[in-house]
Image (tube, rainbow, N blue to C red; front, side):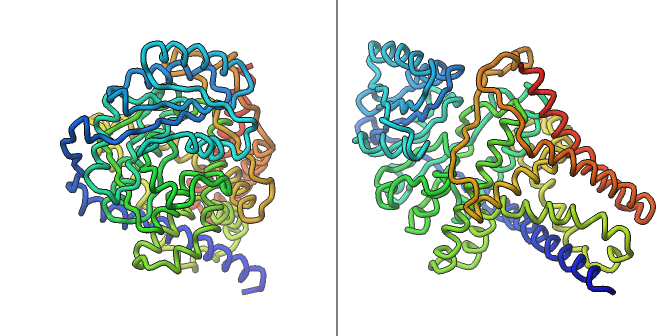
Length: 482
């Protein structure tokens, strides 16, 4: 075997090993889930006098399509008015601010303690806005809702008593539901990915005392925890994950309540979804750099440390996925693939689809119908590897700065709602061209597979379809929305 073949084999095995380890972690989460799924956290009965006070912070930046719905949801909350405060943290630069002024005044007249808070600048983005508002809050707890989320009137009644149950509970996180799951194939696919996280993973992490994170919205923090952990930080693009690990390493406990769902909108535009995923990929990798050392040096047990590293590195595997793909065509031209021990990767690869199915079974009676969209999720998730790998590279190298690119909301909920003409629609970036080039490379790999290794034909077809789908879909949505 020549030097080039050895290097190809080593690179392929490195990528395959990393992916096998990460995929195997889903089996661990599944085991914990089945052991702990009946240990449902129960909120105690709490009198109105004993309920803790809470400030709900609404970080807003140019969200004119959805802010009126959000403010109305705050006004409809069933909670003692003397213990509920709402901060509208508005950094907007468009007509959103005027919409908010009218809505805030409307609910102030109805007796809701709500205020519009504007900062001198947008320093620190969402983290900076939350920190700015926290300085003005005087309540026991602080909750966060992004602009597109709509909590039910009984949300606080069901969540706040959990803080009375245990003084060491730092965070009560609730499950995300979906307002626009039926809008298009993209929203259907995203719902599958989110459901497995919220129905299975968060349950296992919370009840198994593993490191977990607030999900950015739909959660309530004990104010003391935020201050004890050092406050909100804009060092990373995932301020929720950042604060969560600082709090967890200080010994605070997190409680996840799967039965309380807060519906929000998932991105209906592919370019917007790519921006969201890239931000999460960059932010979580930044947190991996920041907390891998403290996590390993902590007094947590080996399982907590290992699952914490895999949690922080969930997007850091994307370059290895890309590497595995890039190396496949040249390896297919040799007989090397038959000599590589890839069995463990195949076994571990069964875990994510099983995990996905469990999420649907746990939440929905019509789960078989919902799982029909799983192939679409595979295609979209596979095609995202270039965009996410770029984000991971930027996090590891510091390239591209620390600019927070928000996910625009369009208030398209029903399939009949039109995305065309909506403000905030994004244009594709250079990764769309990269996806077209990778799709062409996949076609070459497919040709090699047909000649040399027919067993890999389906594998290469997935890549051809994935990259082609993402690139052409992004271009089509951009043209259509204009």
